[in-house]
Length: 472
Image (tube, rainbow, N blue to C red):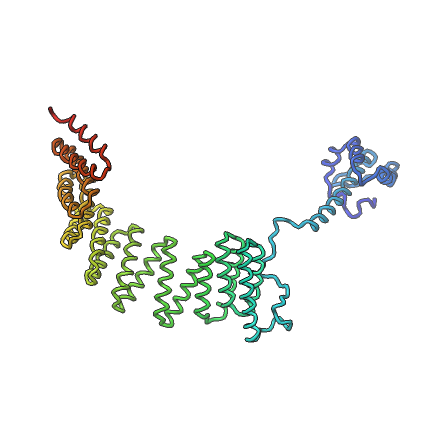
């Protein structure tokens, strides 16, 4: 009755073991085990022989089982029990000898191995100015050595040195560490080493949390943090720091820092196509420029806003912005830009479905450019107007525009533009069923095509097809 005094056997389910393992199975199992001899099995059986002579019951898994009928089953369970713990022990030993390959390696920035570059006194104390200066020189040498290893193709060796440098940078101060983290992080990003980028980014976040617990935070440190986040391609983290810099600069009425930070934020937002935030940044910059009556910067910021509104398909805002820009450009005598803006406004009106306003802007752009003998720009405005009429099946109006465009292209000495204009005129005459005029337009186009040695076969084919259609 002492066989189960610790309750071991009650952990097994008798139905599973006793029915699935027969005497023959037990014999086969005994033969297959090299570590358990037949003599060992015999000794185990002898130790259990009293069970055969005494009628009693024992509890296995909550059931009452007759011992005389199930001695072999009991023996099987005992062997299974021993094997279980034997294999568990072996598995534990192998586990200790062979670490899990999926286990994360230690963070190289958190190693606590004593470094010979540090003084051998209490390492918790702050270094003196002289000690920091000497350490800084040594760390620059480490950086140079790491760069040389990377250049030689030893990436692993290079990063081992860089991580050592980064660990030691903590003893100089957060600014030095952040700048070094950004430098090494940029290299990690270039090397496409995601684990290194993640390790460095995490350390930057830890530094940011630590310094924010002890305000006020120096602007230089914040700038370095933001730059480092950009170097590891973490734009959202960088934006968060720049917004903190912006708040500090506003509170200190530091106008140059406010403007510089807004510009940086706008560039980041633009690079990640966040046009709404970028527009907010440029509107504030525009307001600051207007307060200082800085026309040059007003024009620059309005240009950016016009581009943003175009990309965001906010055409009404784009038109308003470009109209402001035209007024400023006229004052600054930037006449080339005025013509471009007028054409762009016409395109915006087209996108809004306001075709009359679009045509009016194209016409104004043509007149503005023609008066100033900017014939290429005038031809561009006419081409846009002709396309507008053609797309809306206003054939006669489009033809009238092409007739003017022919003369303007001649003034601009644009042979390709002239050839294409005759081609379009020929097609429009065909729509109007004016075959003679169509042939005449295609023939003029062919003459220019021969001069250019380009599209000759096309115009000859057009003439041949139209001639076949005309009455004899």
